[in-house]
Image 1 (cartoon, rainbow, N blue to C red):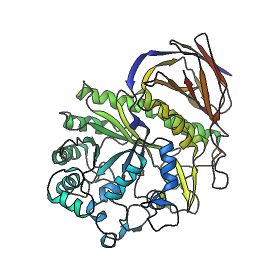
Image 2 (tube, rainbow, N blue to C red; image 1 turned 120 degrees about the vertical axis):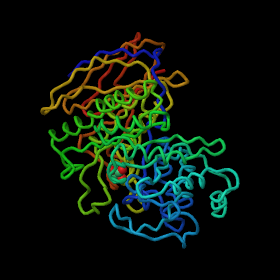
Image 3 (cartoon, helix red, strand yellow; image 1 turned 60 degrees about the vertical axis):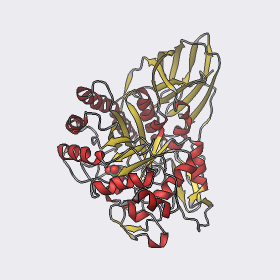
Image 4 (spheres, rainbow, N blue to C red; image 1 turned 90 degrees about the vertical axis):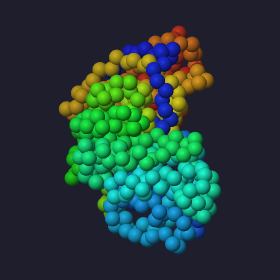
Length: 492
Ligand code: AHR
């Protein structure tokens, strides 16, 4: 049993936790869009305008705040005009990047906005800088947001939509250091300046422009990019970091892993925190006023694909290990919410660390889904001072902090505390002084064997339950976090 002491001061508000930190990502990749979200109006799977009702309902329940689309690597190969107009006239082509399967463009701009409407979430569109043109990007924004008479607004109207849509988040290219054109930071930085010039704000639509930031710990990219865009031409730069247990050639199984491999995953995922801090320090050099934010728009575990599935579909199972990874990352993002304006786990359905898996008409919520659901109280709340005297424990050669935590207070004064114990064999007893007027605590816990996962036959094997392992007496919150568990406490 480990003992941890701490203090939570709800009166010391640090920053707002943008709801977008709980964001998601959907790419034309494998069964994410096609089959996972969009089945078409003629499908036997219950749908509304082609969107699966079950998936939409589950994502709404989890309070999905923002959805990124159409990629990923697919974004820099996507030509938006292929995906508008009558279905029969849309181009049929091969998705060369992901699995070499048919892309019939039946899900395009109109369908994406319809999906976001049904979900009640913000759209985040990633433009094509790698293989597109300035004109193509500029016309896409005109098509989506221009509110007067123009060639693109007339085309939109001819395709059935008179009113412009509201679009805030716009990515100017994706991974342009890799699949988005193999560019140098200097080349991309200059291209970014040129492309973004023509990404216009029409009417009262104000774009939040996101430049392609670094790949993991490539601080040189951040430095050179920030040097070129520091004069406020970008609202944010992106960061992509995947948790890969071994290496890119042999990532490791999603479900079969040893204790050593588990702690390797945990230590790799925790590396994101010093990485974020170092990128922020580099950004500070160019932008001391912190006008440019960080958007972690691809993160999560990347395991080997499930046996028998198309290697280009990136379909993987999701265990309690992934749930711990999600909790650690979300607590880290919360704690850096003064500088991180958005984060998007990869990807929302059927791809990588998905929150939902589907098979035909069947659906299941993964352990990662439950973590997002348990953390939703943080959305738009104020991060407050939450300090624990956390020691690290040596676990199979890795130094692992014994708990992860963050706390926030919403506008009703309710406090949400999220805690995770990443140790596999030891309980952690928590004692925290609560410097505020709270007298009641309720809890929820997600706990299971580290390798446990949900299947279509047993979809609720890993699911949260009520937890009364904490009490709040005379200003002290005390209780136990069992090994390999995630706990949410709500204080009133
Ligand atoms: O999420 C899968 C892929 O990972 C994305 O398409 C790309 O941006 C990243 O390399």
